[in-house]
Length: 458
Image (tube, rainbow, N blue to C red; front, top):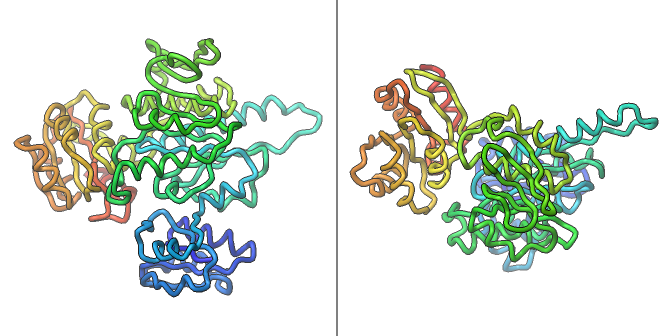
């Protein structure tokens, strides 16, 4: 078995396979000295794991009956392309998890909002199971408490927990297009939040990107459930793939069918023509319409999983931002500073900008993903008082915004220093880059941590 990529997906899968008697070759393009942590984590399996580092030699395919591709390895990589040409099966940790999972799985994908929605669904499920356990405390034969596992593209790969999962448990799984593009299994409950331009540097076209997202639905059965966003043309546009029951979510009430929505100051769930009250909109602590849609999606998903409305309410109330996702860092200089490092596409930055009515100082940039910036630029001209650009994408964004005031910086640290000089009481200072972090940082989390540390040190 050949595993390409030695990050958390690759090492978790190697550990899972070796425990089942497989002999694994773990291959990464980075040199061994940069993989010391990963190598150490698998030291106990050194007899069954062979390491090949510093490149992807094609001769590794000679003894491989399957190639498992980690999300960070593109299918255009020569060794992946050669494996496909030779007819060697491709898989990944998410596919193997779905094949082996003993319990119901909820899979969540979308161009934006995946992590927040996944975390919300997990929290609602935990509340639901807690309520169920409390009601059965006096049963004659106490049962093992049901567990909720949250992972995939968020947190730890779920394949790491397969040995402890039971049939009555629930897995809530975030799935990216990178994982989905080679998958031929779908979860029992499949959620598509939205589909908008993203990762075109990887997928090439919107058609290819959308095709990858569709995989979350394509292998469902008539007994399964799909949850789709009504207000997003991309998500609603894959409704033709749905094989089982459809549950939807959106700001307005569904014209037909089952779904969640907002009416006035309240959130409702409609089923069989009956309106069920969930909560007051004011009890949602997350900012922005995009986060309201994430809550609606989470409640629709919870309903699809049979979780009670009381659990939805308990799970949403008190839920604050996930780190690096419109995360409040601190107040300094009379302004509120927010970390939205997860915004790696212009549309994500636009959603963040729309979340505020205050004057905005926006830190944007990073590495471009071959995405259009025109709509972003139009919104910046309307809503952003000063734009601070940093990283590789500076020139492209600057051309898009035209004569709108901006400051050019080389690094995020320099951008924060500029914001310090510009900030006035009542402002919002918003890191919402619109580009990836790979020009300066390992990932968006490292970028967000850097921003947080810079702001906390003021």
